[in-house]
Amino acid sequence: MPAVMIQGTGSNVGKSMLVAGLCRAALRRGIAVAPFKPQNMSNNAAVAAGGGEIGRAQALQARACGLHPVTDMNPVLLKPETDTGAQVVLQGRVIGRAEARDYAALGTRLLAGVLDSFQRLGAAHDLVIVEGAGSPAEVNLRPRDIANMGFARAAGVPVVLAGDIDRGGVIAQIVGTQAVIDAADAAMIRGFLVNKFRGDPRLFDDGYAFIRDRTGWQGFGVVPWFADAHRLPAEDAVDLRASTGQGLHVVCLTLSRIANFDDLDPLAAEPGVRLTMLGPGRPVPGDADLVVIPGTKSTLGDLAFLRAQGWDIDIAAHVRRGGHVLGVCGGYQMLGRVIRDPMGHDGPAGETPGLGLLDIATEMAADKRLERVSGTALGHPVSGYEIHMGRSHGPDCARPFAHVPAPDGATSADGRIAGTYLHGLFSDDGFRAAWLARLGASSRPGYEAGVDRALDDLADHLEAHLDVTGLLAVAR
Image (cartoon, rainbow, N blue to C red):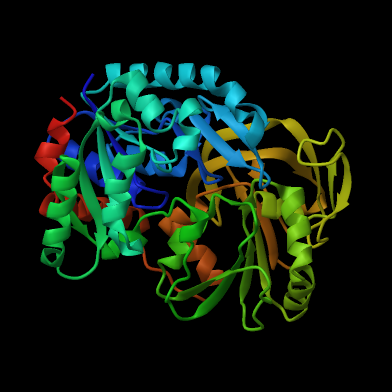
């Protein structure tokens, strides 16, 4: 079936954005196109149509294709819980937890699911644009690989290799990849491109020619730095960025297992909001108007992390000064009196005191709620998704944050402390404006339309600097 795979010489070389831009370019050419990533490792997940979860990057790529996200677009999602272990999601559903050393034992089952999803997706579309993960040059991982050449060989999908010139050494990245991978794997690569160039691309003409001559691969172009990348949701926590706005100071705690952090993108885009992503070891600024405790893959682990930074003391002082606090998903659970985990679903079994800022209690359970929802908050329509374990109850739930359509979240009696399980709520212009107005800030409408414009601009950018026609022809 017609498909092409964008692999990278390393992590964070821009594969996700390249695929999103190529998807939008193909859509504008009248091609029924879909994105696919065999395996993703991220705690930034999206709820797909019909339930199930996939990486947020694939949800954005689906949007670039004019599609609703489905679980077949990212059949294997690894959600890190510790430095060595991750929750394993197959075709949208959790199948267990694996330590890194044990992951290879799942290889046959996972590859079967990957190929099943790919065949189903390809049968429904004219073209599939596939994103790799990490680098095919990680030859130590090749025997159990399902994310790069392991998939490309099994599915017969040709590859275009992307290098990142911004980090330096792009010639060695691309030529070195050919040098270390198996000859049969190298034969899957039809060409290369160079991404993230700053300055005059003509200055790299000699380097580009060297790569082409040394590898024998076709060159598809040099892509200059896309300055408007900040208008698109970031995939990885390493891409978290503060805003340059002025006015309301919003401080978000960068937890060790922060998840679904793109909830804050609409706030970062507001000119009347200054967003600070607070890293570990830094105190909560005294001029903060609002402290946000975001979602996390490990509520209990990150509650301990929060306390280890002294942020619990800072938050208490912030509240005494009259400041506001918002907890989202796992952050909402932390705001309560207690978190009970009798069966050890989120760590060691037991009971852990929360921050005590909301009169609620949370009990963890094995089942995970995965659902796209819509309703109202502050009298305005809101829509988003829920993706969490655990249920929260208590007196402050009598003042829900939203109705989607059932009551969601809780609010303190004075209205300054609030929590919600709803992800994506700030994307709705009316609600965001009303919520910011209560904090004394104004809002600029059009966030969602701005994301679509950014996807169009990204496609224009690639069309201007890549041989998109030639690259898409590789799929045939």
